[in-house]
Length: 112
Length: 112
Image (tube, rainbow over all chains, first blue to last red):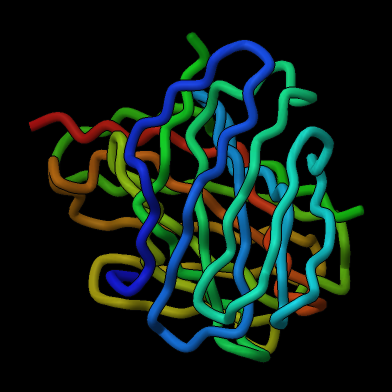
């Protein structure tokens, strides 16, 4: 999991602003995932991608968007449509055909 | 869809005692069950996993058991140590796109 990086560590969003969270991996993993974690709760899947130029909605995709133009990168945009964005965002990746997911260090998003 | 319930939400034990965390899942097609440990503000780390063709798996002080008939699986930690204190998450996967459904988490506190 040391091969997955997320930036920034902390991110502040103003009202009506879109912000983008970075996720990069050098593990040559095909699949990448974005999760949202709220205090005292489990991880909820936002979006996932099994291959470059393809991605699927998870359970809570509304107000978020992603792109997968490169195998090693899977950025997440939190749009102004997401009314309650304050949370800890975790990116993960896995090898093709393998269920085991490895997580990045996370980005904590706060609203000003 | 798949749902994973985890109990208890908090667990406090004395150092040296055993700790057991239980999860139930709803979809009988689930075939992969990982456990993650998350320390405060850190990324979840995989500690052990089990597949549906196995009933039990051990790794030093950690073991996981699976009962497919009852659709539940448990994490057992023996000889607990203060450094075991963390939040533990169970998850289940149907091996379709590698989607993991997480339980709500158990905050384990090991008192010296």
